[in-house]
Image (cartoon, rainbow, N blue to C red):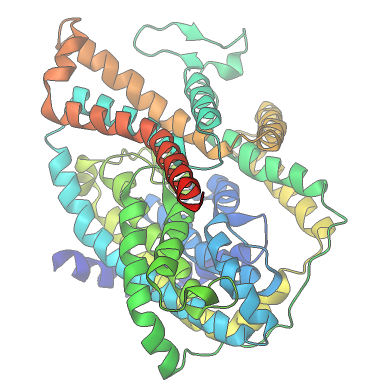
Length: 500
């Protein structure tokens, strides 16, 4: 109860309300633009956020994260192009509904489902995060080492289709994290004689390059691409009949989204796909899915927005990112000198209540904004990329330069921009690189501490119950995609034998 009171106190501050209004508007704008996405925009905002008060800065990018997740549904429904990866499942039934002249209905259901899923997911976050943090008080270096390994193991399914490529990208991120001076020994690693690298590669420039710069280069190869646009209409509140059809779907999607979001590295995209497939399996109207089933839109949107709250639980309580956007948010917290984990609840409770309040306010505001301004935001998706992406590039370059007024940082940003482009071109996602960068530091520090505590006998880690549990989960996380493929192949083989 005290947590909810603190959340409402945060929302009562006019300055905080202004941040929520600005962040939500920007987030919906960003989400409605295919290709931009919350990760890119949060990365672009980092140079400004780290100059703000920690509570205000983290609250602002958390709001952008929430609002962009919803905004992706607008372009998914109207132009069959998800504004964010989390809205991919929304295209399956949202666009067919729009083609039938029911765009307003689809937008209304998406807005309603997103808001309800997001609000319920944040309530779970408010309750679950402190409980998980209390459990984390029992953790020592051995447990944090095993937890970080578990987080790395979840790269098997964070994005893309190749588990091997995800792990390779994660390993690349860990390698980048070792650059600079090792403060334990004073040894310089991978600096190549460059004084600017003695403190390591700064995460801000790296993330601006990988996400914003890489996407800019990729979009520049699609300048001639045309989009099929369905005439926009004002979103309509779901009718009583629609509410009766979707209320159970929204609750199921919220539950799935929150649970999947809490798992490190999964996020809204996986949650939306699982919720959509689950709804299709149990629906009485299976034949309508893919042709304009309103339940399909509700399942996908409630799940991906509920996952935004879920992904913040391990991020705040354990310092393990729940997805790509929360990895950038976690990096911003680290840059601001905040170490997520159980101590954060004692040392910076106002930060946590600020994040909770900002995300709750964002979900309430975009419910209104989506109903009133969906038609306007849908037009944003038609902004020519020849104007949009040069502006994004200028913002990226200025952001990288402004931190230290150093052109070397702009060069680092450009290197990672081209790296991000080529990595994505050949099937490697940037998100695992950021996960590796963040978790790699935790692995190195906790392993060194464990080595000292156990007098060089690292096998003592296997005598710690929580450490063994996380390592076992890591093994399961690595092997689950392979097990899934084997089970699928066995099922297909069984069906073939039955037919023959």
